[in-house]
Length: 480
Length: 137
Image 1 (spheres, each protein chain N blue to C red):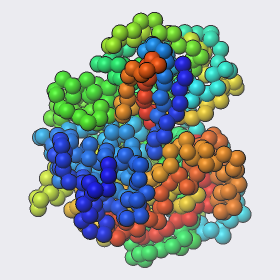
Image 2: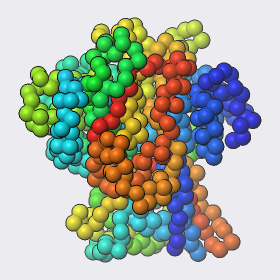
Image 3: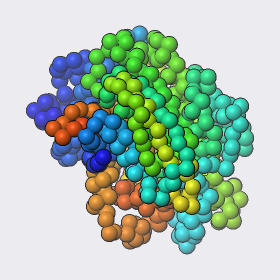
């Protein structure tokens, strides 16, 4: 796609005017610098492709971390009318409810400076990670179905967390409408022994320190202070989620052919929200979303245990508290403003984070004035941002913002660029201890494979889609 | 059979070429296992039959690889060879020979989450046939 097809609206927004079968325009939130970086990237073409889907409202949106995905771009947001619109498994992604969870502690950097190596090593030993990693829990068929129905609450009910953890999880860690009977035997089989595992690729667990506070009032509401030790977890629904997506996508590829929805890319296969197939997918997707929440709740529990044991502290002194848990690969039925009216829409966030504004009833009481915490992980060793949701995101982008740094380099190019280098050594020179199950993971995840996190966050902050609250610096990282 | 990995920002694509269309399907299955592990360490002690249908050659390629990938990530099976037994534009039967994953002997190089339909294609070339597919990794 040539740059001539973009029409600049203002400093942070570029439009792709409708052409061909596009039902709505494409709208990119980005900067001149990030837009230039898209060069050969097919992301903008995918934004335009999503605009072809039936029932899409307002615009096919892209956040500044947007990059070439398969079907939908990563960093894409699209909302659909419930009567005319569709749900697309590819618009959610294989890792259903992949997301982030941030925990704060009562520890300051000086409390753990000398113990950091021990902590990273024990976390690495204690938390299963890597390709196809299996957890310590072996669920019976009955238990697994309970997990799929209850989400985080199942983990809390079994002693892996507290009620307070549920308060600060998006949707309280459970998606309504989950029906385990809509999940295939293959997906159930894959989920049986993977609860409480990190996974591989870009999934990680990171020990971080609050290095900068931008908004003191919001930081106080979120329980953040400079120098505080935090832990960020990035993981999802593991093999169960991949299988749910795969199963339904294959069905829908056939289905769109039968009902004659013309698509520019098979991966955009979808079903009407009013159809049985569409409803069945949403019921199965909700199961996978709940599995992911239970998974991150268990990972948090394992982290708490490891910190207590390694540092010889009791839970009270450690004070590991869940600040928030967000999902960034999901489709949800939400009530949002559209053309001056509140309407129910099916919002797809594929590599995008919900960013609800201050005062929204979905927020826990403690955060009601500050807005929803938004967790934006960076590339390996960079740390992360905590932002707050805004009214502008609510009215302009279906209550959505970016989800991370966004890749710029393919994994093959990253492998070539990292040949002969010691990535753990380079990380150590930056003051970050890294441990990974696979050497290849570290090479594929080198920092230069990603956009500059500061650039991405600057766009959403300046465009008003979410505001900066705090910056966290990485200290130690475990990867699959 | 030969294959090459092509650049895709988020994921990983493979391009397989062969003399016959069957070579492309068999080559794609072997490429998948070659990305996962060092197949020279895999023994041929068991076999799995994979039978799939598709709406056209490209759909058939994706559906075939989805089943092949499930043999690994659903059942822990690693293949060393793949023989196509029956083929039409809409149907494919192939036999994979290999063994169950043994962590002591088989190092897994990477995770392949899924086989996508994005830009999947199978077409004739001057030399024979070529297929393309993108994996979510």
